[in-house]
Image (cartoon, rainbow, N blue to C red):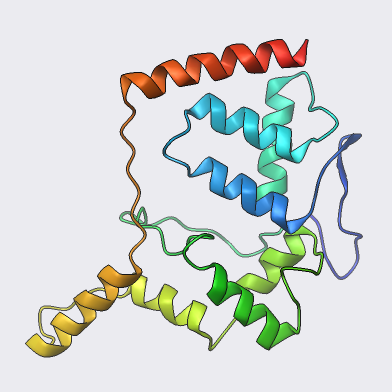
Length: 190
């Protein structure tokens, strides 16, 4: 297991150089949740981002590397409860809240400074008492039927204001685009 107090932050995976910049991790996260991309487009785009000089030819090893990069910073036990499918953060919607929090709490300018993705995620998850955390808590808060009508209405308005909405329907045109992308990707790798 990786320990940031003892180990250098990795810049390669099993001999393959990786782009470990936090911006790459954010792009991969955004790519993997993009409803306009197919599963194959998401995977190959993420692998191209992570492995700028080429990814392992064994697709399983490449996927393991991607999973390792995206979750290698996690040290807490992760439990998934039923109903956890509602997203609580979005790098597009929350960009200024995250930027302001890092500037205020850590004096890190995310527009100009560089960080390893694991370092960024560790700091992001340690944030407290800021607008970013307040919005996440609002998104997670359940509306209790016992709440007063005015409070319930105000809460619902705030939840709608900060809600992360995604559509996941793929049209015939998108299916054709996926096939075109896959042909382009295969030719590009030759």
